[in-house]
Length: 155
Image 1: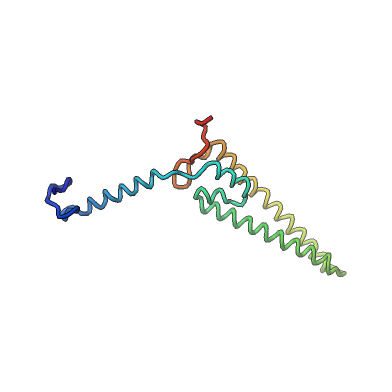
Image 2 (image 1 turned 90 degrees about the horizontal axis):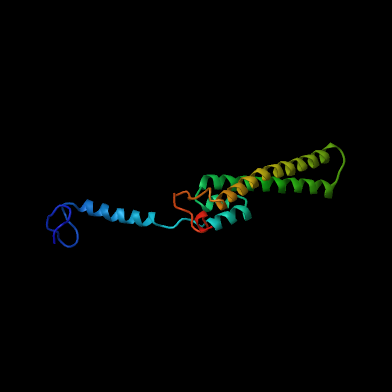
């Protein structure tokens, strides 16, 4: 059997003269197979954007940096809320007089307010992302693969 690339006689299925060429053809076949993989599902990504507003749709589509940032921002917002509510409850349950409980109460309310203000833009970001997915403005995932499922062509 002769090599189709260089014409030398091969031993078995590999050519000793141009072994690298055959290996690179094998790698090209693997890359072409991975390129043909299907993308993520558009409907799943959109539902995650609405139902799980803490960046899960970004993570699902492979946008790791943005997804992790949104997830950490939500965790921070929830932690601020819990801290504010606990400070608020401590003042109500324990009570007390003087400036101390009043400051704790006010700071607790401030934390709850800031957490709420932070949660609003985070929710809006994710809802806009979901609308863009459903409106077919976002057509590819982070790896450049086409989103599957619903598309404008199917209307």
